[in-house]
Length: 108
View (spheres, rainbow, N blue to C red):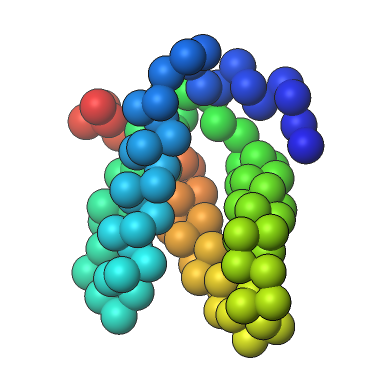
């Protein structure tokens, strides 16, 4: 969808994909505790600054992940599930973007 973003991911390395997958799994399974996870998600946003992630790229990622989910789940990706996914992604992205705007010397 956006080939110029490939530069954000090291070639021939599965680690970033595994980290994204693990992080999404943790957040999705902990949605009832999203308020408690807020500081972790904001910190994740702060850490994405070192990779030069730009705010507009969150919309591209949402679009790509939504397409993957729709393909993988087929008819199981109902309008209700699509809406829930969209809302969850937007909440997580907002927290990460909030973290990206916070400047701290403790970023690792």
